[in-house]
Image 1 (cartoon, rainbow, N blue to C red):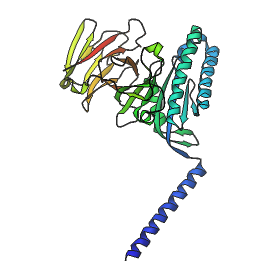
Image 2 (image 1 turned 90 degrees about the vertical axis):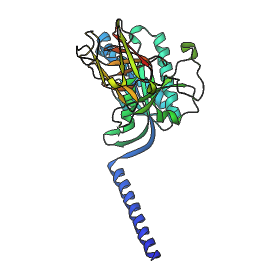
Image 3 (image 1 turned 180 degrees about the vertical axis):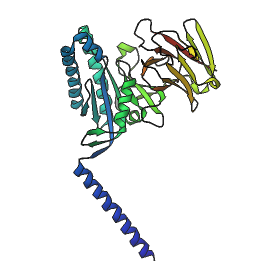
Image 4 (image 1 turned 120 degrees about the vertical axis):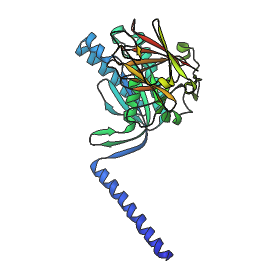
Length: 336
């Protein structure tokens, strides 16, 4: 009886092995290749649309092409593989996470130095998203959740920022000189669960006054927003307190908004704040976007129909970035 059971088990294992070999053959025939563990960075140019308006199509296209070409060469020299070019963006895959992070930091530092020496019309800022995961190459190119995540992180970056998911940061706790600031959990495109997001501080000590140390996976001492009983919103001479029981609330210029901000740059229902698993989440629902600047990290996130966890006191800019004059800004503070 034992021999019979063993024989059945052997036949089943053999069947599964043969099926796997056949699947691999079919994938190879179809030109499908899978990479189980890659670190992907998406480098995007900031304000390229404005360049075409200020320089004209020909000069702007030449400048954008020059910068993206340089980005590709730097990444390839660092061990990366350019897998897609998207006009003013470059998607690169790295087998080693540390190499991807070092390359991202080098790109920001070298581009910052170039901008310092270049005339105004030739200055281009970049933003970078990093993610780690699996992807598949087929006849239409590389696809995968990791690519979507890197692109989404880049979309949320401000100028000269690098954002990375927690999984990719865990991979390189040792080996590079950098600081990481935790931005908390964020709901990312296509993800059912929130993702840990970190900002990489790449600027030298002389620029930031922040020491750059090896293996500094830093989680800031944020105020524990999960313990707060409510939030206080302030704009101009208006102020209002909201308890968790009052959520969700709508922010906008509509008279029926829970907190009204009367400015033409603000959508009628510009954003909302709601509670999710003890965390407070800000969701942009506008046509023009929302920027968030956290107090403890001095970090700016740009949301366009996206969400972020409100893990600390912050300022919220509606419809424009913080560097634009007279942008409507809201102050948010937690209270217990």
